[in-house]
Image (cartoon, rainbow over all chains, first blue to last red; front, side):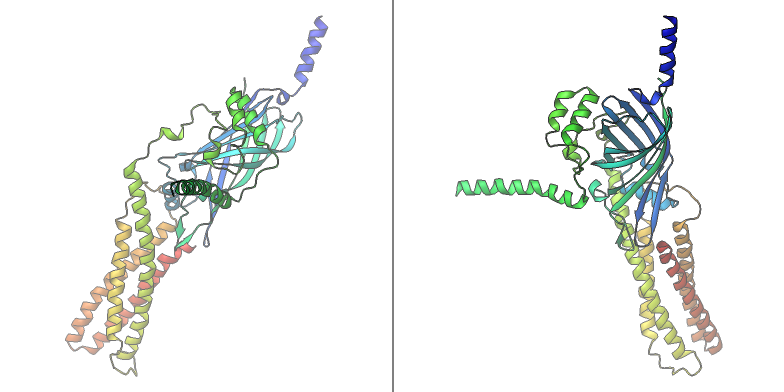
Length: 185
Length: 248
């Protein structure tokens, strides 16, 4: 009996934690927006995004958020103008939620592409679309996620800023990299 | 006539109701994904949130990808942080909104006036050069043909310059700018300060030049004209720099 218990414990220890159900992960990293104007290529970076993941038998749920004011483009005037355009006083956060039904965490280290259906809330307006996230699992407790997807400013009811009477492009590219860590139960 | 009018109203309402959806799909350029079935998505979310019945019903057609908030409200009604404020929790501040709109309007006007001022200044420089060649250069015809045109263009430039400054200086600043050292705005301000100094100098030189002319001092007049010419070129240079920094 004692030998059986020991064997069960050994097998249990050998199974990667990632393979178990009901896992919670959290992460931090860097997210950028890329905005194009005839005269400018603007990259605004935030190092303050928060990310949470929940994986269970049904699949994956992910949520990320960052303060609009945390994005810095290297030009204080432009950043202040961005806060005005995005009505940051009224909508201080950009929030992304995503789901991947049927998702299972890989049992071995490696990179997989996770098709997420995401809901992006920006300027108080939510837009839903699919996003591919590259998930690199380093070990049972650590992973990296990289992503890049376009957003439409007008879809979020954002009046496109103009410079020299020329408006910025409607497409806004969101990209980033997040380091994830499995939360201890 | 009663029924046709009513049906026309119904058809019109339907068309108007559909228009936003058609426009939105066109603006977004989003394709319906082939990876995720809407019903499957809604069922998954419902199961995950412990609200199986209602959300599964919502999957009958309300959670198609490519739709906006109106079509997907509640489809991802979860908060993994537990403290994310809901949109409705934050009430808009009418005064803040008014200031933001006023600032945008004033700075747009500032841009238009600023570029117009630059054009007027360039015109003044060209006319000033022609006037200088006519009155003070060796071999000048001394006709005075460009005197009035140069004077009018400089007055117009000065007025436009003051108007441009007004729309910048008196624009409200609802969100204070973070101090990040030297940036495009700082470069613009340096250019504008240089141009302002040039404008003030030109006005002062105008009085001094007039005094030299009244005193019948041709050498002093020519020297003043040369300084006026140099300051004029420098002023338009500063103004061009102030405008062009936005391009880089």
